Length: 472
Image 1 (cartoon, rainbow, N blue to C red):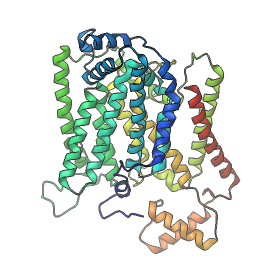
Image 2: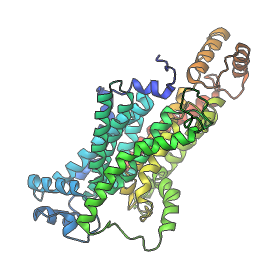
Image 3: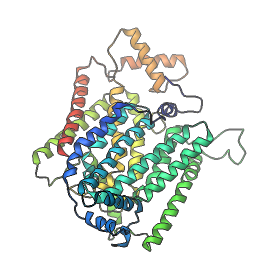
Image 4: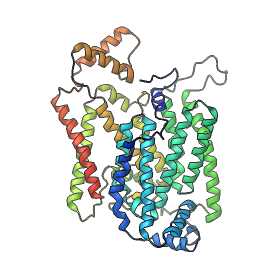
């Protein structure tokens, strides 16, 4: 097992082994295959709604923002529409193939990103499977006019991979090159859809969360210049955020200028004076309800709707039960920002950071209309659920092999994951070990209730994947 070097967090050392995200493994094809099976029926769909507007613009070789209301500046999806028209003409199956390929690419990139951020391939596989099958993606994948959401997510995910990888390179030139690539792909994401504008904020916060675990206490380093010593770590945190965001801000400014010149303004939909209402709802129920319970309440298939609702409640109850039966230390780091085990907050940051540009837009309704707006934020949600599930399994204690072996295994586990933040004092270590052994709440394989909860959670996971596949 790799150990962290001085000044390097456990997350950093763990992620170093996952930086080679192009190291291919056949298991990474599970997610794309699930997505292919789920959305293969879209090949039989025709054009709908605004698809014809894009077709007409592509046929006339004109930009979409010049043919209708000047609302959006998205040149890269328009270019892809023109390429599709030149290749497929009016054959709708070809256009749906492009959308599906973009979705499958995103599934693969989610797997790469989850593994890079957590160092755990199981989290990557589960996050990719959830992303491939989540019903909130139906609008983005099946509706051709929602292609900008697919394309901007692809560019944002690649930008994230390059951004996080550049901090793990010892060669400055390779780090600078990766950072420039992240800027390039972020620019491509912006020119695909303005939803990418909040992505750099999420990336910077995640990066700082991965590599900082100290409190915001005053710095007491004597080797630093006098004007630096009074700075608190919070001040340094803020300055680092600004410095990392500055290049992305320059790219965003260039995009805003190009958008203004093309549209004669910033464009975008009007919230009709409902900004506060939309923002408040999108930050709470508008984000979580469609992701947790992606149900079309007006669906004619009521049996599938109730079956999916029951399975969702079952799997969430299983996750909650497993979490409450974990040893006290995992629950502590799930709620402690100062802990070195802070991966659980990565998904939340990605969710809310990517949602920022769409906060004042009309939320997802009961028929899952507008759900395309959650395509990029769902990356963080799938990562969050995968982390909770894998973490609940990771901390299960194996069968007892005698008191001596159990004490040794628990001691090793405590030291490796800093579960109880063991002190250097040997007597304190001994007391913590004995407390861990006598803690009645610590789950073991001999606990029938914990075994039942674990089996129910695992069965619920398989059941939910099967029902999601059926519902789509």
